[in-house]
Amino acid sequence: MRIDSQQLHRVSLSAEDGRYSELGFADRSSRASDETGPMAVREPDDKALIVDGSAAGGQSTAWKTVEFVVPADLRAEEATSKPPDGAYAWMVIAACFVSLMLSIGINDAFGVYQQEYQLNEFPEASASLISWIGTIQFLVMCIGGVFSGFLCEHFDTRVLNAIGAVIMGAAFIAGSFCKSVELLMVTQGLLYGLGASFPFVAGTAIPSQWFIKRQGLATGIALSGSGIGGMWMTSATSALIRTLGRPWAMRVTGIIAMVAVLLVSPWMRVRLVPHRSERIVDWALVKDRRFCLFLAALVFAIAAYFGPFYQVPSYSVVVLHKSETWGSNMDTLMNGLSVVGRLSVGMLADMVGPLNLLVANTALAALSLLVLWVPFDSVGTLLAVDLLFGFAIGGIVSVIPVVAAQVFGLARLPSIIGLLFISYFVGGLLGVPPMSALLDNVGHRTDYTSSIWYMAMLPVCSLLFLVAMRFTVTRKWRARV
Image (cartoon, rainbow, N blue to C red):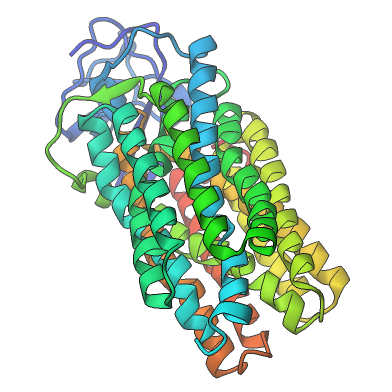
């Protein structure tokens, strides 16, 4: 296989005495094997890729034997003649924005449904039982994402996105006729999650493939759709429930989601595809220490993600004695700040490094919960938590696919993102259900202290794994990674 001498490749290197990432050039005479094996490379400061034991420039140097893994990008094929960074690429970003705005925005707005079910429609049901509707919705999106990522590499993502749109709409329309928590788990939870997994994976993975110069910014814009969706969907859902009732609120939401995602599906296409692989799980990634640390960090980050969104509305009513509308507006505010976080971190990622920003935003999320929400129960501190946590969690979501693209390659990004959804699935199990159980059994549905403590420790655990990953990639403090 030939490697173009004019193209810069990110090469992942590992040795017994440490792992690091290098940027290297290879001349036209250099060859790279599709198989993993021992090869000789220069010391990191030389910034040159050595293949088969000969330097690209013919210069002699000190050698170190390492294990060289050829990135999937080097085995990729272009799925379209459309160039990256162009006008069509921005159309793709717009399509991803809309797809995520509806698929994730509806999930983010579940706190309003939780409030309606808990306080009005099913007052005899426990908070933990009701929370399983939203939890199942998210868990099915994640576990379905593993298979959706694989399907995106084998079938047209535009068709898959359209199929997801129809299932999403049908799920909410069917849910509008349900009169029990159990049936809502099937429709609003399982069926909607299955349909949303297609636009969720495609909208998250595709943007990074279409940009080289402004990859972080473009991905941030696309992923800000989920925050904007959560923001307006929360307010719209609350208004629809008040004026039309919960059944018609679900019908209107289902129709809007179906039509909007169907309209943008023609632009939901990948730019790069790897050589066909029949494996759903790339086990070479699972053996990579960096990937395992990344996976573990995301488990705790995602576990922390939905806690405030689900519990702030009812907390506002029960603890702060505010109206239900005020509680839903707090969710809207948090979603709004998550949009600011997605865009800001997306712009900074190209300058500071996506992994560095992921570490910083996780630290901010942990501090906002530990320092503000744990010791205080006032309106002012809850507003501060909304602002800081919303900004931080938006930044976290924004840079996850950028980190994955830069560290593990672009070509198999849909399946890599799908594999990362395993951590989302486990994180979903470790997040809202235990928080709600603590609220029911320890706080007796009035004292949120134990639930908030649990919520606050999750980003702390995520931060520990991210710091370990950061120093596994490079031990240089000032490195832009």
